[in-house]
Length: 99
Image (cartoon, rainbow, N blue to C red):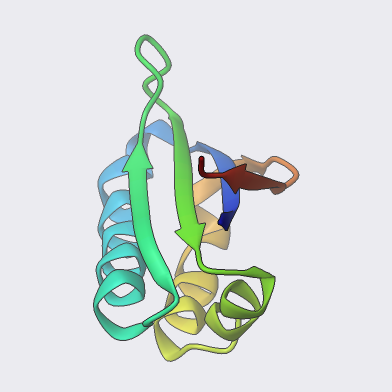
C-alpha cells in the first residue's frame, strides 16, 4: 500500500504571517473535508523559523493530488498568498510505503 506525499514550503513575510496561516488553514481544512483522496494536510512551522511554513499533505495517489489542484479552496489560496510570501520553495513529492 502506498500514499502520495506532498511537502510545500514558504518563507512568509513576518508581518503577514497571520493572514498566510488563515489562508493556508482554509485550504487545509477543505482539502481534508471535501476531498476523499486527501487524508492529511498539516500546516506547520519549523521550530525557531518563525516565518517559514511547511505543508505536509497525504493523498491516496498522484491522481488524488492532481484533483486537489482543481479545487476552489486551492484557487482561493493561490489567489491570496503571493503578496504574503517572500519565497515559495520547490514542492517535493514522495511515495510513502506501508508494510
